[in-house]
Amino acid sequence: MVETLILAGLNAGVIGSAGAAVAIGQATSLIGVASTAFGAVGSVMGGQQQAAVSAAQARQEMLSARQEELKGREEGDKIRRALSVSLASQNAIFSARGISTAGGTPLTLAGVSSTAAARDIETAQFNAGQAAASRRSQAAQFGIEGRAARTAGFTNAATSLFGAKDQFGSLLR
Image 1 (cartoon, rainbow, N blue to C red):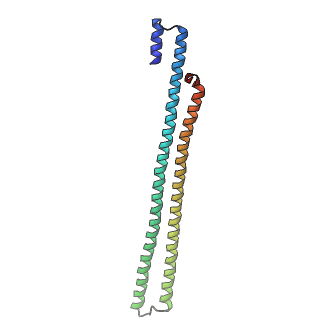
Image 2 (cartoon, helix red, strand yellow):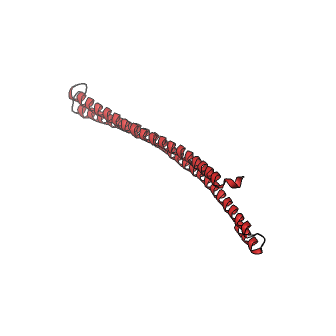
């Protein structure tokens, strides 16, 4: 728009060619300053947006970590229920055959079953704990990335503005 006015003034003979060159140079400089300002705002907004995305991803990972812990507990409960059913079944079979479950092979078998179930429960809970820790670690990484993106947005904006000051400083005087 500024250039259109300058060209119209030139054509009408209102502005001399030297004046027109100065006016065009100043208009171009003003457009450059405005472009730099918009770029700086875009950098800040981009950093803020990336930070918001990273924060949402971090929250999701924390929820997933909690879900992993709950899955580990659920797996442990499932193993305990299966052990109870197995021990009851063993007792029923031995009792039906008239074998005492208070000692000997039935007691040994119950002990082996209980030990195996305890190991399985421990393994399930350990695996769930590892998966949850991995999710929490990923959440922390997303938090770091979000803060870095926000900082980068501000840094890029400041760099653009300082560069524009050096480049277009003559307009500000």
